[in-house]
Length: 130
Image (tube, rainbow, N blue to C red):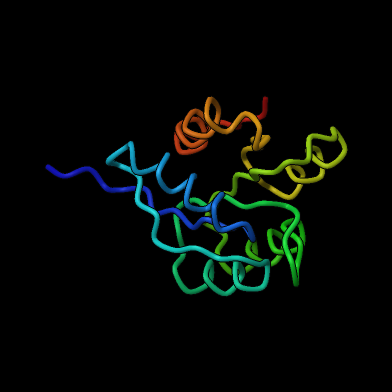
């Protein structure tokens, strides 16, 4: 019996970061990156089109920031879970992100140790915020 894979959309304007995150996620066979977006507007479009299980999204995005993109994605792809992955570590920003329905928040500086743990927690129905 084959386990279903977790379909992930990566959203960040910095291509090397998307490549890093993709490589990190490829280490777990049950995770599959199904799309990438480099700005908030593209994130909304791809989320509506792909209906991923999970969206890993930066906050500081061009055209539409991650917070605004998340608001729109909640309407268009309500089943998609969101984890913000950002350089921003301000408690106010983290709280706003989680109040939008995001289930996780990972600071980029901690991504090597926290990203996979956040994905596991969120896909198990838990919240993740370090």
